[in-house]
Image (cartoon, rainbow, N blue to C red; front, side):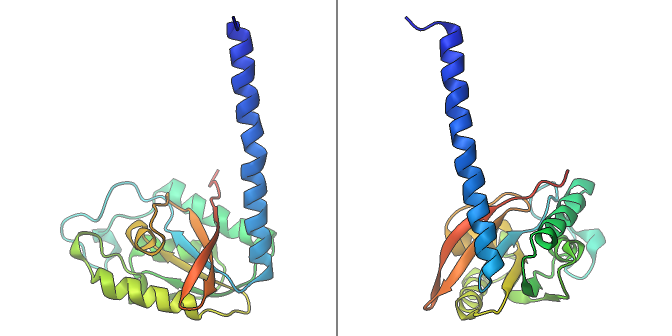
Length: 191
């Protein structure tokens, strides 16, 4: 009969054996980004809450859910990681929501171009089908050189890849004929 010590040791070894696989997957994704011609779908950094408060206006940040101090630090840390790894970013597009624009600007990877095809359609704020189709077309058309960074919202990324993402998390995709393939996921801690 296994002892508690034996069970604990077995569980610890199982957890430790998983960590290098995750780290290796992240390194593989970072290496692919160094080669360029990929698209990075990024959810804006941490902005506590869900949706936007009543009285939301797209051009007025004080009416929106915005980045927390941790979210601002997360965006800056992500930008530093890109620069330290010498990841080529050719263009940066963002939703026009302040939390997405602030994320893109705090990353400091180049001029940020706000575009409606990355705007949130949560709670009927936009036409999901049109926004998703335009985003798909933009992703499929990307050829580089360098990588395309798209800072958007969880609902937009879920519509594109069929799965959720955390705050500040990135899904890296490779454009293919009228579509794309997921290369990997990345997340950078803001601390």
